[in-house]
Image (tube, rainbow, N blue to C red):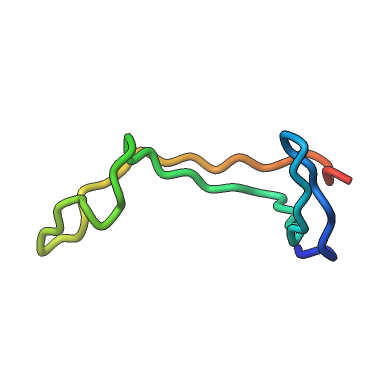
Length: 60
């Protein structure tokens, strides 16, 4: 879900950023490599470790 832009200050530097709220995030463990760097065989890409994490309640 997207929200209006907000001003965020980090290390005394203020910038406007669009705010995004995610209820679930899906992670692929690529160990720092790009997904495109994994070998592709006729059966598909080498499977990556993956995990989905969801919030039990909205963050706001």
